[in-house]
Image (cartoon, rainbow, N blue to C red):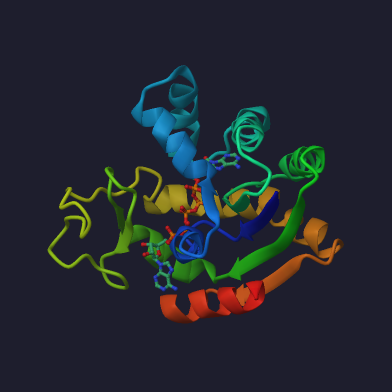
Length: 213
Ligand code: AP5
């Protein structure tokens, strides 16, 4: 089993980059998407996560680690995972190391998407997504072809409840406090490759591909 970790602040473009890597044979795993699926199904886990996510706070480590453990242990050893939004704390990073070691796997790279806060606020406030297929758009930078409906299935697009400006600022400060320390954790292992995420989507994708080559 191999894994690539996509690291970067909310709105840096992790999900957008992941779409193209999925086409290259990586299995995209977004803990945010897994949690939103639980919310949609109104499971007890989803109800607990909803209140935290709407405030821009993290869901407890044991919950997300449990989701990733289930996923990894139910997949055959040849899988290539692209981890988007996991790990986000040092505890999660240490647990991921244990899980990967138990499967004789490796983390191949950690791709760090760097993006200034003011760009992030603009990106997240213009983001819309499809509740049906999960496709992500931006009303200015990556607009759907017809008004506010999904290009894939014509479902009406929605704005995420955590994409309000006040919540975005909270998410950025939680990132700085709890997730940014992972850069040093992975740099010590020689795994980090930085990409400037403040450029066009095509250029960001090309730079990420170059770092994975
Ligand atoms: P999650 O869903 O993972 O959100 P996030 O990390 O905050 O990241 P986003 O999905 O907001 O942004 P992104 O980097 O994927 O950007 P995107 O490609 O969409 O997590 C949500 C919540 O779940 C967390 O706050 C937490 O509560 C909980 N959670 C999840 N994982 C957890 C964990 N491990 N532990 C604890 N809690 C956890 O792009 C953003 C917008 O910009 C889009 O509109 C896009 O079209 C546009 N865009 C992208 N790239 C560009 C570009 N280069 N130029 C112009 N526009 C661009």
